[in-house]
Image (cartoon, rainbow, N blue to C red; front, side, top):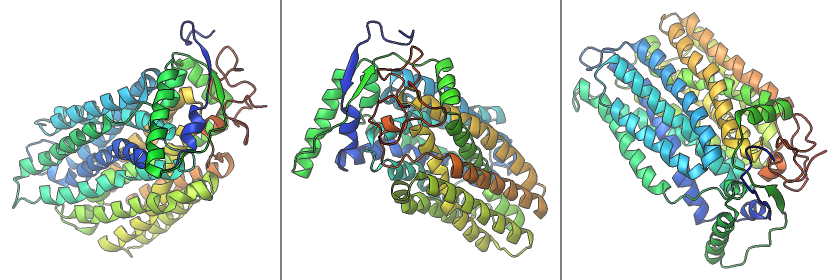
Length: 511
């Protein structure tokens, strides 16, 4: 028995996964979406506010001795570095101690750090609490994406995951418009308005915390970690609630899974599973995250500065332009999300990445030729990011569903951290250094780097993306705890890089 197994661990047979997957959409699922998905609104609010108030923070009288490059470069990179560290730290805890416990803790960390950011009086204080705010948000990515995929029926998993991750842009719209109000010196003094924007994040976070208390633990996590009775009771209660809502009995769940309960999975076992058993999927995850992280972290942290520097837009009105871009970003996952469940993951992931990259190359060429104004530049970005946003959201969906259940949160955390560290930390630093020169050719180069990485990621998806649409998570990747797995917990007979055999029952060893 593995040292990660529970003492006296039981072997159980359960229909919990298939019972969850055959549920029709209901009020209970809306509660999951609202309770878990709204955190991306906070993330969008945070990132956008900092990008749009960068010019104001660096002005005399802001109450904070900081330069524009330090806001869009150093502070942005530290926020992302904190998110990477938080994802890894809380991701491990999420797989070990459960989804619910950790998505409450990570939100609390975010709330405290945001409140203290609003009180910044010096550069080191601002940078420290930007890092800690990112630390809490990074933990949210692992805990929440795990819970979403394990609670949402397989028929709807793709579109729901994309729309929830895309709700980031609702926060971005709010942050952009809020920054316009906060930067209006006729309403708030220079040293007060930007602090109020962070305070609003605190208020919204408290509201979300109240809603989130009612979101249950993942029954999939529960039955593996010695809480099978609780998992059965929870699913039975949900079934009763949905039958009462729909006025008809639910169809019988057919597929069973037999697993050996365990406590958790060590880092060595996670690494062996991801890289030995699923090397193609690992390559896919890295590619998707690096491409979208470079593009998005660079642009969202620096778009306001681009408008000010190259188009002479007032720092107090950049929020209007970014609100338009944010709306286009939200429409992407909202309108294209359903196609990820119907047309399929591979064509949609590859298509959105490649198309957004090509369109970005075109935008860079037009910008370099001097054909764009602030308005037409914004419209070009709307079109590019309409497709890029759906692709970027699919990166989180992909890594949360193509690896075994026991490694899910850590897999999300690992790919998010590594991909974002490569693209999200270097992106803002490279982008700010190129755009701060005021040379059009330098900005064009920054755009082309982001475009090239998106196209390359799309090409990787053409060959390595997994046809996970409308399939059970246990079918896509055999759980390590399934009876028949070897002593290390690896999937018995799983072919490297392929995972579960299409059409095989959940938990069945693959040839």
